[in-house]
Length: 229
Image (cartoon, rainbow, N blue to C red; front, side):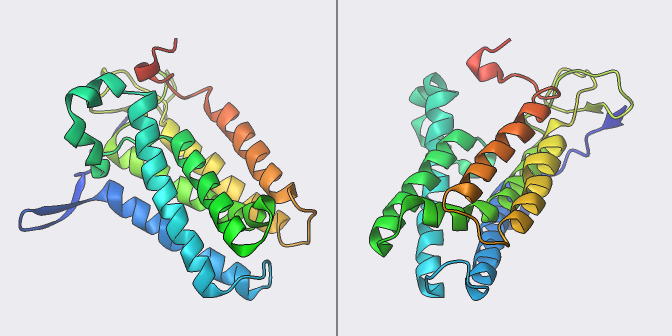
C-alpha cells in the first residue's frame, strides 16, 4: 500500500495570485505540442509555415480549454455549475473533459483546414502525433491533484488517495499516462515517420487511444458524476 504524496496544488504564489500545478501542466502540454509540431514541419511532414502552425496551435488551445471545460460542466456537473456559474472559469482547480476537448480540437482542425485549402485529415494526420504527450502531462496533473483515482485493489501498488474513501486504489491516472500518453506517442511518432495514406495516422490515433483507454478502464473507477456502476 502506498500513500499518495498529496502535492500542494499551488506551485507558486505571487501576492494574491496563485499559480496551480494543474494549469502549468496545460502550459507544458501546449509547449510540447509546439516543439513537436515545429520539428515535423522542418522534416517536411506538411506544407505549412511555422507562423501558420502557431495559428493552428492557438486555435487548438482555444478548442481544448473551451471544449474541455464546457464538456466537463455539461457532461458531468451541470446542476452544480448552474448554482455556482462563476466557478466555471476556475479551470486551474481541475475539471476538464477529454471528449469536450477532443471536439474543440476537431473544430480547430476543421477551421484551419478550410483556411489553408487542405482537407480535414491532412491537418489531422499532422496533429495526431502531437497529442499523446499532452495527454500524458494532463494525467500527471490529475495525479498531482489526487483526482480520477482507480478502483479498489488488494495489490501492493494500491494507493491511498486523500479525497477518496481510505481504500487502496489503482493509480489509474498513471496507467493512462503510460498507455494513452507515452506508449501511444512512441507508436504514432514512429508510425508517422514513413509516408502514409491520408487518414491513416488519424485512424491510428483513434484506434490506439481506444485500445489504451479500454485497457486502462479495468483499473479506472467509473465516473461518479455520471452515476455509472
